[in-house]
Image (cartoon, rainbow, N blue to C red; front, side, top):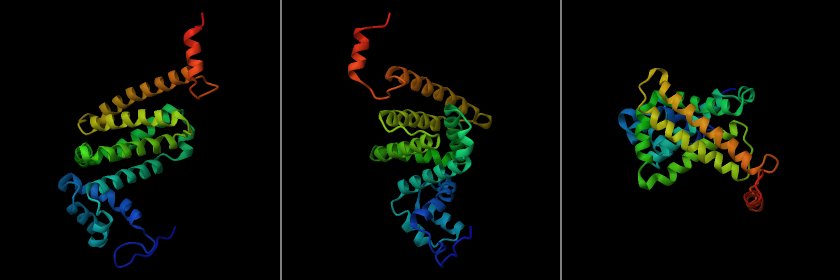
Length: 227
C-alpha cells in the first residue's frame, strides 16, 4: 500500500483527526510516564512524529481522557494485528481469550508508569462513567475477536465478567516485578478459569438448546426436581 503524501502539517492528505489520534497515542503514552497525560506529552509526541504542534493539540483538546481513550484504542488495533482471525480460529475459546488479554498485557507492559497514571485518572469520580465505557469497549473487542456472536443477555454477561477480569489484571500488572510478568499471567489464568466455569454453569442453567432465560422453566425446575 502506498502511503498518502504528507502535508506541511505532518498529516497525510487523507488523514483524519481520529486517525492522527491513533498514530500519536503510543508516542504520547511513551512520554506520559514522565510528563503525565499532559499537553507536554502531546507536544513531544507531535515533534517525534513530525506533526504540527497546533494540529496535535487540536486532536487532543479533550485533555487526558482523550489521550487515554486514543491510547486504549491503539492497543485494541495492535492486539488485533498481533492476533489475526485465522490464528485465533484454530484455538479453543479459553485459549483465544487468554491470547488476546496476554497480548494486551505485552503491549501495555513497556508503559506501566503511563498505565499507572492513566488508572489514577480513570479512578476519579468524575471519570468513572468514561472508565466503564473504555473497559466495556476493550472486553467487547476481545470477545468479538474470539468469535462471540451472542446478542442476548450472554452478550452483556460475557463482557461484564471479562471487563472485570481485565481491569483487575491491569492493577496486578502495574506492580508486577516478576520475570516476564509471570505473576500477572498466573493471575489472569486463574480468573479466566473462573470465567469459563461461569459460562459452563450458565449454559447448564439456561439449557444448551435454548439460551434464553425462562422464568416459568426455572420455577418448574424448583418445584419438580429431577430425582
